[in-house]
Amino acid sequence: MSNVIRQLAIAMLAGCVLLIWLICDAAAAEEAQVVDGIAAVVNGDVITYSQVRALCAPQEKLLRQQLTGEELDKKMIQLRQLAVKDLIERRLVIQAFKKESYQIPDHIVDERMHQIIRESFGGDRNTFIKTLEAQNYTLGEFKQKETERIMVQAMRSHNVKMNSIVSPTKVEEYYRKHRDEFTSKEQIKLRMIMIPGQKDTASAPAQKALAEEVLGKLAGGEEFDRVAQVYSEDSTRDNGGDWGWIERNTLAAPLEKFAFNMPVGRISNIVDYAGNYYILKVEDKRGGTTKSLAEARDDIEKKLIQEEAQGIQERWIASLRAKAYIKTF
Image 1 (tube, rainbow, N blue to C red):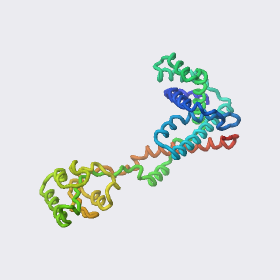
Image 2: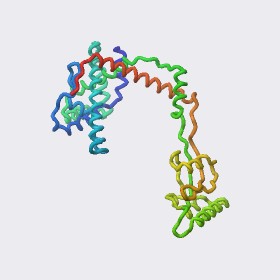
Image 3: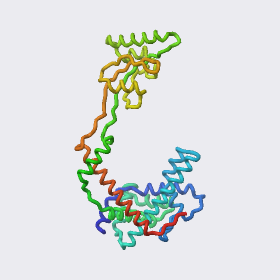
Image 4: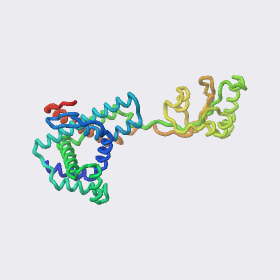
């Protein structure tokens, strides 16, 4: 276990968690007027409201910028419930670590502290200490939090033991059920001219005749974009009828059927839809292709391994919960 802890801790040294931790606690300080209290008890260990607010602070700030009223209140409640759940799980993991009498060597934590100072403060220890003091934290408090982070990561790694080889059968089954994941979206580069079926200054037959005249000009070799600028009456007129790259479900169904079935470079006949006349040109196509199983295999294997690891971890946490006394308030 000590080797597992050492390897994991060294790998985590690159994480610059001090700034995130201080930002969270600084944001929580904005709610200093709220009296602290007990949010949960886990086998005798207390989780406070201030800890919940500190964990939620960055997300809460975003929510307050994006939402208001009942929707904001609902999201805030959900966020804090998730934070309590996360803090309970962390406490359970730390308790399991201590129950096994595992130890994090001091030099592992020291190495991490040095790495944080190098990465986040340019190697300036004095600036690091002053930053802690400005947030009313001692070096010992910060060191304790980092020690607990290492404990949690080490225990999660230790308890997620799994086979890193996925059977070909599972890979093939996933591929069959999730082909859409490996199929790129079909897109076309479209230009379109729209002639309204009715106009104050022209009768419906005259408008149909105009559409036929426009089609004749295109058939005679005139540039589509220039003709569109003169005759089209939709929002893309000034851009020469250019719709750019579009996906399916962008156009009305009858127009989409024509557009996505047309060869590149072809100009359509007049499409009569909803009382108006449309002429379409597909300038290019892309997407709509599906990776082969061989091409998708590596991605599928990684995904299945991750899903298995997540499942193992969730079952382990559930077993810790089942044995614990947990009370939320």
